[in-house]
Length: 192
Image (cartoon, rainbow, N blue to C red; front, side, top):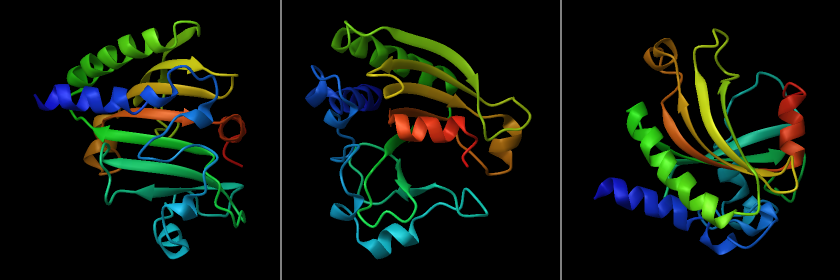
């Protein structure tokens, strides 16, 4: 029952934009790319929840939300540095699922529904090494729907290496990503 509920929650997150071709039409925990994060959190909360992914200041940064979520265990919001409007550039929402086979089964069910919703959009499926693991042993198992690529929506199971999990650096998860061209380009540039 819990599994069915999780699948329905993840699928229903995208129902409002099922006929759309713009990532701004999709809501995750009530937020969309293009919204102002300051409408959902105070400026102080945004600053307090900035993730220390980088030792130096970069063009963008990431804020984490873990409290008062209805559908996900964690949501990461990408923002542009020095943007006082706090416009959301990308949303990554995840549910912790340590059992990788369970994650893949749930992802397949979500993808089946997304295939119906995006029947006019070519899906790209791939297995990719996770950038955070220099050993290359951590991987993303992803299905991606390109909406005016590089804008896209992606569902993925992330399987981290035993070393990264044992070091407390990561947890396996089922993720929904609403990615803008802006952040996609920044990631491709090496997060500079």
